[in-house]
Length: 197
Image (cartoon, rainbow, N blue to C red; front, side):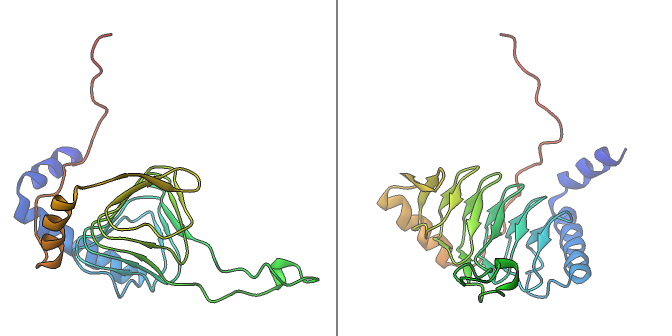
């Protein structure tokens, strides 16, 4: 019953947007997320620091951990179980256990506009992921990722470019313009049937 009601609401995009916006406003208020745009989506089952900044249509899926001093640009997508963490414990004080060494100031982590970070990826604190970049599932990002590059592996390294220079110019014009309101991808509600072997 509930699933069929959700599907009926999803078919009416305007109603869906209004309900989604109000649900997110409530979640932001409940979690104390004062710097999350009302069009951004933060799943209820996430651990997101109260100081997190999330711009228009940013999407944080279930099970994500977003640490201190993080900014998510417009259209950013974090797949399930992504973690943006690290960089806070002092480890270079000889003669003092790390647990008693105190914490360093956590560097700022910026995930620029239109970035997709895949399932289970880890982004270390202080990294900048450039606009339009893609981080593969399971990658561990320890260094900055340039714009429009696809990175993967442990540690993450460049695998490919996302666009040709001409396509990049077109995409940059779009990202530099006003926020686009598009149609969300439909959720995957159940496993797709397998074809015969």
